[in-house]
Length: 341
Image (cartoon, rainbow, N blue to C red; front, side, top):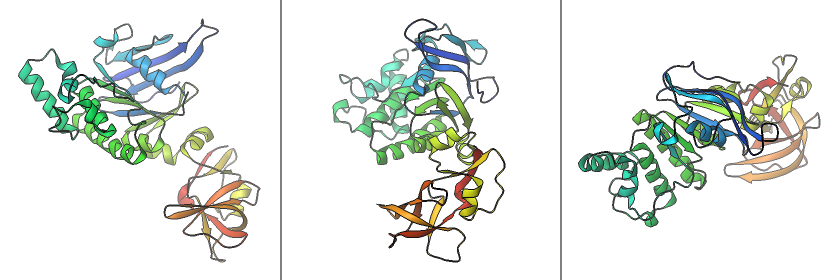
């Protein structure tokens, strides 16, 4: 069980268990005793690989999946048995689920039927402007690009001013460049409106761009929750570090052979971030001469596959291809962290 901020106003989900199929002893446990808090105005991202339980946790909190056990509270209000439509939560899915028979304005106004017409129209224009879609209220849904459609879906989710907005892989169907751009738009929009949000993604860059805190999920549990900066600089386990892209993991002897001069305590290993191993032409630069396995050209740099002195495979970053069968490499201390072995 991992807990975030202290319980209080905002979301408090305690001891959440979600199971699918069969009875208690034959069902698959998708979420296994998770406790999570989201403070008012905070954006918490659930990050994990496919099957880690992140979407099941979101759906359980939303009320879209029955809980095997656990409680859902908003402040002092217990919502565990409250129907989905009465929780005051909004949900935005990957495909946006826009209504093709309604124009953009009609989609955004969908959750505003309780408002007088003039107020409803003002709110539609307000949230469309907020997401950069001013002037699109009469456009047909079929004429929108993928990015525009997701902005409309976001506007529709924000229009009723939900006390918690839940977003399940909202950008995963878009190409990377558009995804990176809209991640910034999403964070700016959520922060400017003071929206409390629970956001699901498998993409580390997207999570770090959007979140105030990131909860890494593995096998139905929260392995670690921290700010993006804290998560990157202090991964709590080898599994979390590997998921974030660290690797390889070096013993003290392997690290020393590559020029590492700091102590590596017993029970710890040195994890290399991407770019943590640097190719060098200087014979005076501390490090080792290693055998080249392959070289892959990227935009702006070359990844040189090498075999380290201890036999571990790694990738060294270089500004250009290297001629010959060997290359000098050294560790970049700023791109290495200590994690439990």
